[in-house]
Amino acid sequence: MSMALELLAATGNAHKVDEMRAILAPAGVRLLSARDVGGLPEVDEDGATFRDNAIKKACAIAAATGRRVIADDSGLEVVALDGAPGVRSARYAGEGGNDGRNVAKLLAALDGRSDRRARFVCVVAVAGPDGLVGTAEGEVRGRIGDQPRGQGGFGYDPVFIPDGYEQTFAELPAGIKNSMSHRGRALAAALAQGLLRGQAG
Ligand code: ITT
Image 1 (cartoon, rainbow, N blue to C red):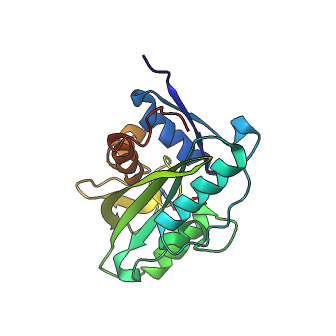
Image 2: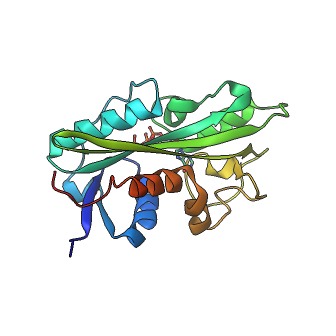
């Protein structure tokens, strides 16, 4: 018999926590949020890759809190923009991370372009106070629409249309997004690798 595992979600993005909870609850993993622990220290996301940043966030917050944590570093890569906004997705239109301005800047950068191919990427890192436990990655491919559509999700969801669909991630039900998203796939891989098991540490 094992206790339900509890992890701290090392993110200041409440939308990520909502999605991670919905994805992990069926596996018996409980997530604490920043609010549940009275806030989190800021971590400078200066890594060159999603993986570097996820590891940095997970290890810094595990060390600072003494808890087992899971961090998510994610973003959008657009083929015609050579992979931008990439690791800078949250700050694409400037520090302060405004979703509406980021989307507007993306649509302007793609104005008149016929190649709209893009992918979302997510790397999750799990760490304990003694250091990194492991990482897992997921992606979902799709294309950027011509204008924002839908009220669900967050970030670039109103302009991201996953392959095989005509609706954006902001129009599709959350359960459909989570079943195929970069975050859903990264977390499924983390579960399959045993990174979220309740071992001591
Ligand atoms: P934390 O670092 O505190 O986790 P953050 O929002 O700054 O929060 P990131 O640095 O990983 O997180 O930036 C991710 C950005 O990529 C996010 O702000 C969105 O703009 C975009 N993004 C990631 N996943 C997304 C999703 O599922 N749907 C839409 N946009 C997403």
